[in-house]
Amino acid sequence: MINVALPKGRLGEKVYAMFEAAGYECPSIKENNRKLIFENPERGIRYFWVKPSDVSIYVERGAADIGVAGKDILLEYNPDVYELLDLNMGKCRMAVAAKKGFYDDGQKTLRVATKFKNIAARHYASLCREIDIIKLNGSIEIAPILGLSDVIVDIVETGTTLKENDLEVIDTIVPISARFICNKASFKFKTAEIERIVKHMKAQVDAHD
Ligand code: PRP
Image 1 (cartoon, helix red, strand yellow):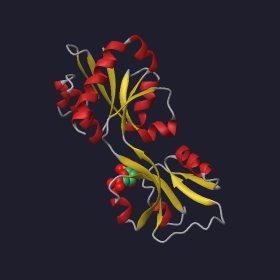
Image 2: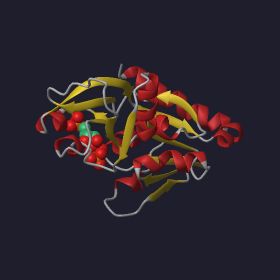
Image 3: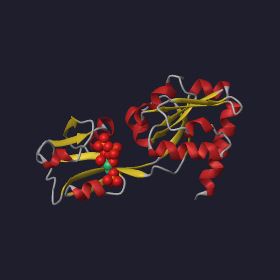
């Protein structure tokens, strides 16, 4: 049995559709209920829905053999897992944004609000810019508006959230997409099964290119 941690939400549904098209269907998952675990013994697969930012924790600790996590989470938490495939979906970018017209003259410590404090710290360390990180858990865009921070480091997908709050991107840090990840011990002991899944998933990624 292969255990798969799927990120709950819209991305997770697309990812499940890929698994299904790859031949790892589990019809009971489509029943609209609050269950979190679904399995298809005939296909040797079990899925569970977890919070997207928790997928890599399940995979790193072996509660899941494989899973799908955003590159943002992998860069931020650096879990000890294998990253086997870029699924080329859930595409967005990690960016620095600020109020329109903001200019960093480099004179003062820059106040940076973010959910991604390691990514932000690394980015500014590479620029030798001194910063004060303000760790928030959501609605990051509010911070510069209320004067809590000078800039934010956050995910930008369509740019709508920034636009509607009179903010703009001032720097792109890294492109982000969903990645197929694998527990290291599982890869050793279930190599053939996992490689087969990766092969089928890759065929779909290539077909959508
Ligand atoms: C993310 C991100 C931005 C928004 C960007 O938030 O933090 O707020 O999406 O998307 P856009 O460029 O398409 O507008 P998310 O929905 O994950 O919620 P959060 O506020 O909890 O971070």
